[in-house]
Image (cartoon, rainbow, N blue to C red; front, side, top):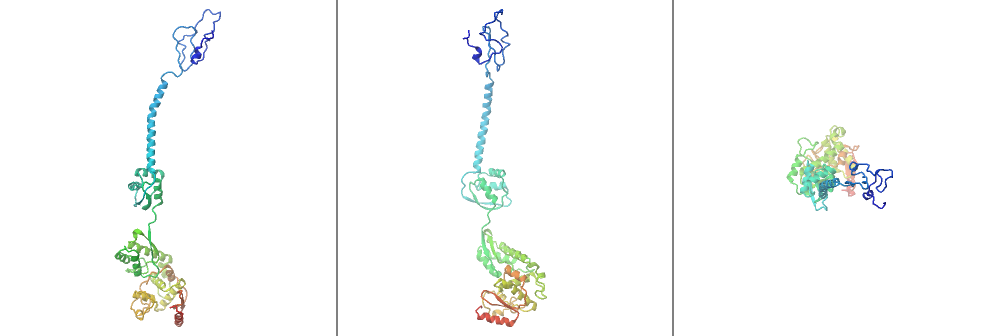
Length: 420
């Protein structure tokens, strides 16, 4: 009958070679028979099994795909391996979150002064940053610098670091280096005496010890200073200086700074080699570099406009060549240590090597600190035979002549016009 259920259909299997159990044997067959031993015909579990013959006796075994214990073992191993893997993932996530918080803790706080000493290593800098609470971890910062790159960091004072700062921002500030130190400007104008410069320094820097300043002035020796001299007149170069705030009380540093400025300018102008350059300019007299500096100081005291400086230098050299007194009143003022408009007869009779009205030749030292224009004029006198000059207008220009009578006429004319 065709209404009987097919066992292959029940288990979802396909028949191999046997005929369906519902098929009637051929009339020529002697009897129905089973073609194979059911036990020997059992296939592996993952192969389709033949249906037992219809009406056969004995036990029949059917293996269903997916059965057995292998699947359970696999799930159990996956479970056992997944637990530590999950723990590792959680730990790594926690460490990463912790490190991220150390690298960038959030909003930075107040500004902190921070100093990197000379020779400090990255590890030492990291420790100091952590102690100041600028970074949250010295170890993480040191690792961060190695990872991201940075340094070596310059020694100095940093003013832009803050508490709980992001490490990337800290590295950026340190890589930029310390800001220039705050300075105090100090100006020395041309033509001042050393004594006037000393008073100016003490007025500008009241914390400076006067005794320390005197020691610096007496114990500093420029290369062009005569042997055995302690006089710095002429060597304190007139300029505007910027003195770092930590050094405002350091007298030696300030004096060194001014003398160094003089040395630079004198080298630029060629003062150390002037003897050859000025050979014959003062007759047979050889002009030494120090004497050229004295001439520059005389020019500085007399000239009021730059175009007159080389001409005044020439008058000085012409008078030296003739062995005549220079007659420069500024040197008389230096002798009496007074600044005034008019000299008295008593002033003019002062017995001093600086009184060029009475003494011939150059004064023994410069009489002030000349500027670069006057040094240049002393090294490059204008050509001319002038022996006299007189102020001819209120703008500071001079009239030059080689005639004494012409000089007297020019003096009378200038007085009549109210020039002096």
